[in-house]
Length: 438
Ligand code: XLS
Ligand code: CA
Ligand code: CA
Image (cartoon, rainbow, N blue to C red; front, side, top):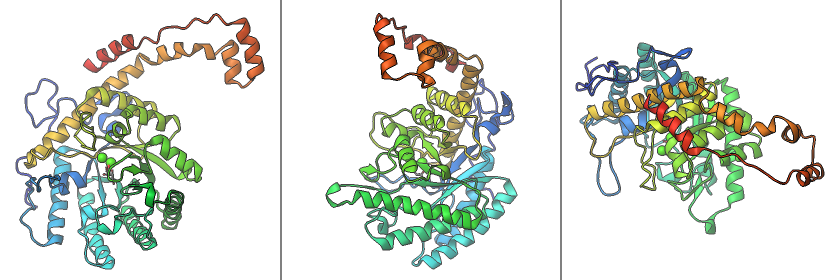
C-alpha cells in the first residue's frame, strides 16, 4: 500500500530533552506507571470525524484542510482511501483504538437501503485494516444530526417517522460496531433537545428518548452484543437546551427510567466546561456513582462559549482527570478518545501529528503526576483528616443512621461553641503545582 501521509514519520519516544517536534517527550508506550504500562492506562483513540472528515469550514468560510484523498471524485473510492489513510495515521502515531460515526466511514446515499449497503462495504474494509494493524474499535456511534431530516431531533423529534428512521440507523450502527468487535457504543444527544418550549412537549420527548434507549438495550440483547453502552452529556450546541445536559442530569434520567444498569457515561472535557463544570467534576461525579465509562479527551477555550474541541495540552486538567480515572480503577472498556480537531489555519496533514503528540504527551504527564499524587496520598491524607469528625462520636452516629433531629438537637445544645479548621486550598494548590511540575 503506498504511503499517504508522507510528511508524518512513525512517531518515536525521545524523552523530555528531545527537540524533535515529531517525537513524544513524555508518552512512552511500554513504560510502566504503577502496575500497568502507559499504553494500558491511557488507551488512546483517534476520532475519525475530526481527523479524517473535518474540513475546517466555519460559519464564515469554506474548508481549508488538505488531505491525501482530496482529489478522488467517487465518494466510495474516497471513503476507502480515507480509511487506509486513517489506519496509516493510527500506526504512525502508535494508538490502539479509533472511534467513528456511521456517516464518517461511508457516505450517505439517496436511500437507506443503499446507505446500508455502502456501510457494509466499508465495514468489510475496516475489518481487514483492523486485522492487519491490530487497531481496535473503542466505540461506534450513529450520526443523527447532520441530515436535515433530524432538524427537530431524532428520538426526541416531534415526527414519528424520524423516530423510526433514527431507530433503523442506530440498529445498523450497532450491527457494524458488533461486527467490528467494538468495545463500546456511544449515544451522544445530537439534536436531542429543544430551542423553545413554545413548540415543545418536553414530557413526551423525554419519554420517547427513554423508549429509544430501551429498544436499543433490547436489540443489544438480540444481537448478543457485549459492547458497553455510553451516554455522553453535553449542555448545549446544537440545540439551546440539550436533554443530556451534564453527568448529574444523565444520571437522574437513567435512574428515573430504570436504565442505569445498561449504561455508563462518556465524559467529554469540553462539554464539562460548557456546562460550567470542570472536567474533573464530571469525572468525579460519574466515578462516585460507579458510572465512569470512557472519556472524550479534548479541551475548550474558556474565553469562547462554544465547543471548540481543541487537542488537549493543559497538564493541570489532564492530571486532575487522570486522578479520577485512576481512582476509578482505570479504564475497562473505555479509553481516551481524542474527540478534538485542528484549528482551521492548521490545515496541513502534519498538523494532525503535532496535535495528537501534544494530547498524548499532556495525558502521559497527567498520568504520571496523578499516579504520584495517589501513591504519596498527597491529597487523600488531607481529605481523610478533614472529614475525621464522621469516624467517631456523633459523626459516626450520623453516618450509621443512629440519630435523628431530636438526638442531634440534644447534642447541639451541649456543643454549640463550634470550631472549624481551615480548608487550606492554597496549601493544596502548592502541592498540586509540585506534582504537575514533576
Ligand atoms: C459533539 C460530540 C460528538 C460525540 C459523538 O459535540 O462530542 O462528537 O462525541 O457523536
Ligand atoms: Ca464527544
Ligand atoms: Ca465536543
